[in-house]
Amino acid sequence: MITFPEVRLGQRALCDRIGADFVPSPVSSKVGISQNFDLFNEPINGLRHLPVGDTTGWYIWSGEELSSAADFFQPIHVSHLIEASSPVVRFLGLPPGWRFLFDAAGYEDIWFDESLLLV
Image 1 (cartoon, helix red, strand yellow):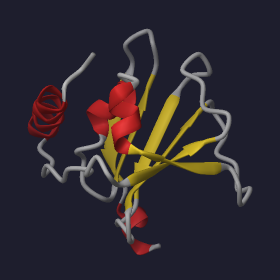
Image 2: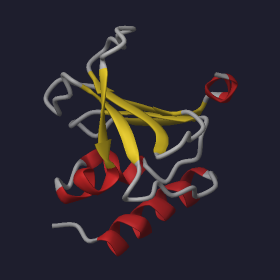
Image 3: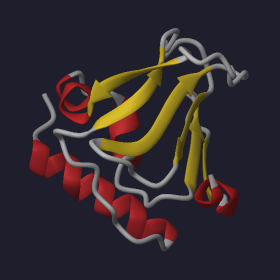
């Protein structure tokens, strides 16, 4: 099981590697995760808007398509993703405006998308 300090170190290292500020996602905060989230349905995608209330601003889904359905995303606490040792946890220190995409074969893309800050 991954421990909280290990998670934070990994998140900081990723931010340092790409030159992004480290903006942690508190373990008691929520991310939006797609109802059909499945690590075997690749790629895995994530984007971060500005946090609001008890949310981190993160939205995570699997597959090629991002649905516009109102109930596509369901809230889950960051702590539950950490407990599940989800591979998405390593990205949750990226600041608002950042996106990621990865697959099991090792492909990874991380980029800044200013439009995420304008919502």
